[in-house]
Amino acid sequence: MSADDFRLVGAALCGIFLAVLLIVRGRLHPFVGLLCGAFTVGLVAGVPMADTAKAVQKGVGDILGGTGLVVALGLSLGAMLQLSGAAAALATTGLRLTGPRAAPWASLGIAIVIGLPLFFETGLVLLLPIVAAAAAALPDGEGKDRARLGLMLPALAGLSVVHALVPPHPGPLLAVEAIGADLGMTMLYGILIAIPTAAIAGPALALVTARGVRLTPPAIEGPAMVGTPPRRDLALLIVLLPVVLIAAGALGPLVPALAGSAWLAAASNPVMALLITNLVALPILFGRRLRDATIQDAIWSETMAAAGTTLLAIGAGGALKQVLVTAGLSDLLARLASLQAISPLLLGWLVAVGIRLATGSATVATITAVGVMPGVVAASGASPELVVLAIGAGSVFFSHVNDPGFWLVKGYLGTSTPDTFRTWSMLETAISVVGLAMVMAASYFVG
Image (tube, rainbow, N blue to C red; front, top):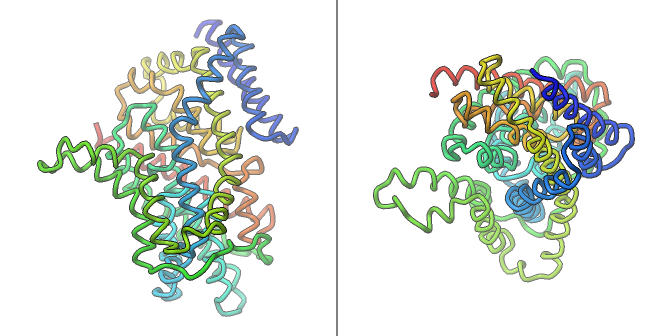
């Protein structure tokens, strides 16, 4: 490596360190911290300030123009499922159909299904209070807290693993577009890896991490619901519809009658799939009440409250990514990969882990990592789909105090801060490490 390469690495580290300092110590919003980090990278790397500013604008615009729409539409769908009671109906039915021994696995399965089209925080707000209520109804006894965690931790594992590995979640979807991976194959590989990963990190790991944990009453109340929940089959249709539309776009060309179908290609676009689902969900979930101004205000108030902070954070993450690319970090990593000094899958995972630990955001970690990986993929010939999944696995490594999700989970579980590290942080780390191991194993079979 040359002196310029070392300067570039130093610039990246300086920018990320400043962002961490401002977010963790300065208590600034990630939007401000990440923007300051982006300009610092450009300044230390010797990029002209005008070029740095253009890179920041481009990075924010690219992210919000694509992934931002997916986030907003996913949040609005989550608000509809919350306010209509559809998610609650699915969860309570699934948990009621199982006995105590199978309940953790039912909790995991429900979380994977409900979490497929939803942003992680949205799925958490929808599902965890319902699972917590079911857990609270368990018989009193010495092991009640452990049994309650045995239901809630698998639900968290299911939500987190699809958030990290399965499009149309914003992180994996953006990675697919940035690296040029096949969306349908990424979904297929992601689901195949997500299920065993969630089983290990959820029900299996909970048998160990839940021992000796004492719970207090949850600090966060469950979501408010409006009116009577819809039929459960209709609620399930709404949850699965965007995934079915996107999958149909990938599988449609295999059917002669659908090959080249313009309407299928349009409907399978993730933004269009979520928009269609939103439009179908309104009459199905609310019926005649959808014209009620109170219902409409409630849906969009819930959506905008969550969308504002989320979109600002990921937009600033896009700015940091673009400045790193403009400064030349992507080219440097590509050169290292061409020397076969490190596996491109492990490299993508490590970059995502570093950004995750620094910023606390899985989506920002994915955005930043994929921004510097296209050259690595081209130079190494690695499977783009597996690189996407490796980055996704790295993006959830060890949630801690700079992750808003850490405090949200703590509030819903009713755990102390040390016990949140012991349960939730270890769960996220298990997803990350097991996910990487499975991606590496799959690389021996996927060319």
